[in-house]
Amino acid sequence: MGNQGTGRSEVVAVSRDRDHHFSKPVVDEVTLVEGWGVEGDAHAGTTVQHRSRVARDPSQPNLRQVHLIHAELFDELEAAGHSVRPGLLGENVTTRGVDLLGLPTGALLHLGEGACVRLTGLRNPCQQINDFEPGLLREVLGRAADGSVSRKGGVMGVVVAGGVVRPGDAVRVELPAGELEPLSPV
Image (cartoon, rainbow, N blue to C red; front, side, top):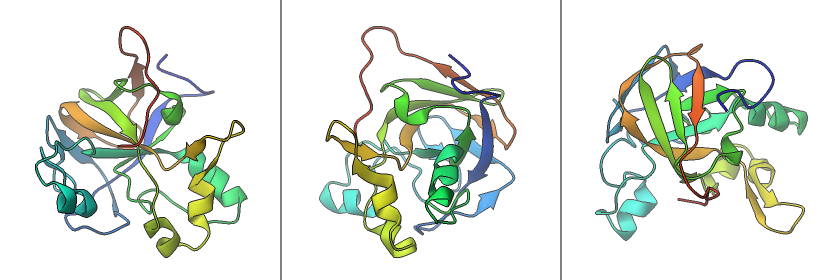
């Protein structure tokens, strides 16, 4: 299951920002810290760091330590007339060759030599995406053929094994045991 598409499953880019900005600058490498998130990123921590969630209850566990987006989304957005590159939507890790949105809750993403992220849910795209680029929200938040809400803004996870992650690193997927539960917004 390590390669769900054609070609190699890999990290395309990594990003982090010490401040709470919508976009994150692309860097050469990030260090994932077990139970914490991306070292030096504003969203790292054991409790919630996203401003809207802190305002509601700052003691909630941080299920959004790492934000991952599949580069195939950028291809889709470009075809719809938008120019989006890694880091611009605020993700920490951009992948290619992994169907992130199709993975179940609890799936493990092994990144590079030793880092591992457990998926906790879907990113719930919000108005900030339209503030970044008008019309982009309707491209990443829509309706599926069955009428359900379709969220394409990436997935969220927590770090279960630390390590350095760089562009070009392999991504290997490990599914959880038992009944698979689809990702839902966190």
